[in-house]
Image (cartoon, rainbow, N blue to C red; front, top):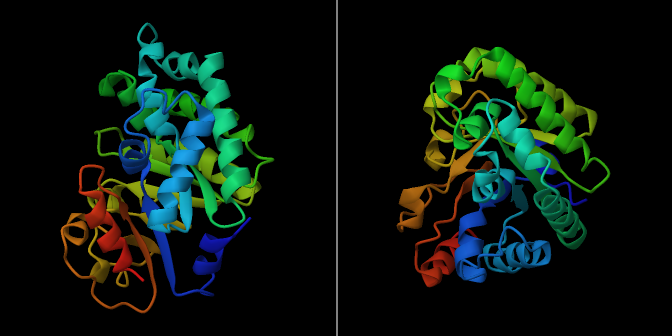
Length: 274
């Protein structure tokens, strides 16, 4: 295992490049192939090929993107059964297991392979659950199911767990408390535990949930050093549009690689990080 995130967290390296590029890889390197989320070798190879261009030191398996593709499996369910309907599907289950195993074995000696999950509320909403139905008990049930999912990958060279939160109106206190189980599971397996926040507005409301690092793709790089907690950002829309990054001595450069930008411009922008 490369251990690049832990090295940066420990202050033993100054810059960590962490790009989120699921959509970019699918669009540019797989030509939006319909089997992207059903053929594990195609998926793992596409991410690996994309990262030869991007040079991210972290590569994520994005459960949220995979689940969104297969969300129809949950159409006839309610509550936590929406999630179990996905996880009990043998084809989807096999894809996730085989794709993560392939990524870990192909990439983990060069980069950190992490698992990214949507937060329990984000996943339930994505699968069609009404926000008004999501209380602590439902969140707690969802976390139990997601924890069981993650345990299947404990023996692989996985470096971390990322929980991706969206601002959907669910009580942040309830969700923070429920997600402490996932935080504990990450600690048990010696995984880095990260929170991905779709906007800085979520920083305050999720302050009770401790994490090794918070990833906020909308942040300017100048905002990173002023943070009380270790935070990644800087590679936002302005950066991909051509703005230069201000100088900073220590940073986790994090952001989403746009799928709709000319690939030649992506190469130019990535080259500017060297």
